[in-house]
Image (cartoon, rainbow, N blue to C red; front, side):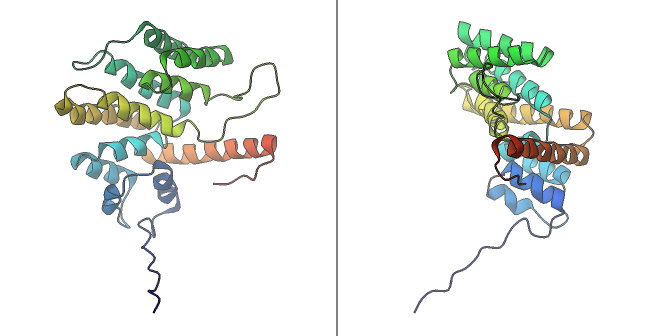
Length: 229
């Protein structure tokens, strides 16, 4: 006799559309999803996850809705802090150059600064927090193709996992394991302050959703790929 297929219930069922979209984009850990209830909001989930030290899920929740420049700044500050904190590793010359290149893009996010950050990130190593920040900068431009050929836009949302990845990796780089949770908590708290400055969770989520739609439409126009959500 064949065992009937059991379909697990959708933990996001019954949520408002925007919160459902937000959580799908954030990809919280499975254990963190246990806190999701029909009355949940991004604010209550963030507070619950921080209280129970689901720091990675809280960080991804923030990264999912921050504007590009603000998210890069947050990742850059975290990567820089990882080179200065007790238990951290002092930056190599290449990493120091890459941090400066990202800072230049934050100050003036033009194409020359973006491509300079990409080059500096490759020199520093794309498997390092600062290299990943540089990659996020590059993916927040209008084209990933060389400047002398027709533009090829980056896939919409391609930079998103790099931002949360940088922050989590930067905190985890501490040689003193006891310092990792409080560092993650401090990085998350800094991200929350940015959420507040851009108008709060609801405003940030609405703006992120609309921006992603525009990016998808432009990507579909240029690549003739179907636009989606």
